Length: 528
Image 1 (tube, rainbow, N blue to C red):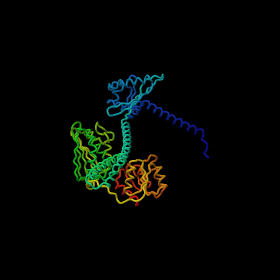
Image 2 (image 1 turned 180 degrees about the vertical axis):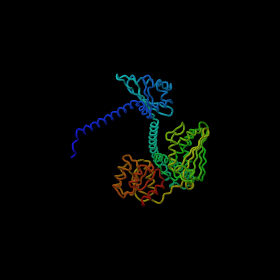
Image 3 (image 1 turned 120 degrees about the vertical axis):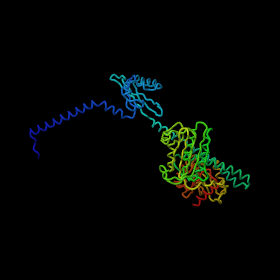
Image 4 (image 1 turned 45 degrees about the horizontal axis):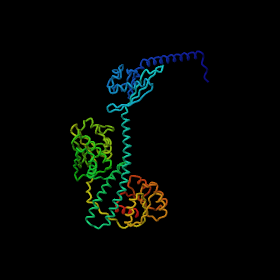
């Protein structure tokens, strides 16, 4: 056990503590003095560190303090502004409004907020009253924030919502078109099977069939557009693709602008999401059209090229490419503009309409391709696309083959379809193929009949008046586990149809169908 300290030892310890305390008080005193002497400088550092605009004003507009960001916005140094009147640094266009806003804060003793556009920037301002001890407004604290980025993001979100709504609308229109086309193509198929092999009849039918197939192609494009941003790469004969796409775009050009093409027959094929790539061509052509102020031309050309490593950019690899060039003789661009056109949110009065060039760049690079732009003021613009290529252009089909059903079918089909016209033509087609057909116009009716009728296969539409196909399918399988089911829809495979197929359905056939296609699908599923 330690002995207790003596009186002398305690006295010495107290003296040391008092000395330490005195030193601490001296340090604190010096810190307070330094803080008082440097407070203004420290506050100014904090003031200037803000990226927002900050000002302190007298009610009459005299500037008491301003930070570096706000001074920069007025194209002055802070010491050139402090002591002056803020209204002397503003354009006459806004002075009256700013005086009225300041007066409102002083008289109503409430903060206000407002927005303004300044060249390409959007600013949001807040004015707060500063009170004295008697509750009077003696100063105005002004804060301004650059909200350009936020506004651009809001615009992008609005555009995305609009595109989503348009996609939904496009899908619905395509579905209705396909239902209507089912009656046309189905009846043409039945006519081909019934009419004698007479040249006049077959020629007329061939013309009708060709027109119907063009409509089918257009509705497929609508359905692909409705799928949004998902990429579905397909082997694409680039020449045929460009011809079809430009035919869709030609009517959007100004009357004074002519479209020229140079597309050799030997162009190679590419792997592309056709809808996304159509959007790319559409955006580039739209920009070219906007750049031409009077008479002019847009020229689209393509060539097979082989790129070495030095010619590649980004994720590109040396090898064969199709080089697609879109040139115009419009106003052209300065180097500063050309260097920025792939930046998100960057626009000029013509760049960026429709699909932005940043999105164009993203789509092309996601296809492992490349894009460059060459332009000079007054000398037009040329956009170069490079898409990885393989194989040669597939020859176009010589004609549309006449419908010939493959062998007679055998079995009973439950046809679940709510559109009367589609029901009628599909029933007739199945009957002509040799099948027995039982009809159901609703999901509930289909479930009842699958319990009571001897059914081999069901053709299931995905849109029914009482429930969706995805709800009907498990109920059908619960009633009859061995039942074969073919999803039957005017929508594409990447739609609610995919959910039913993933759940175990045996096949998919898209409206409008050909009798030959229907016969082959029925045979394929029943022989599994």
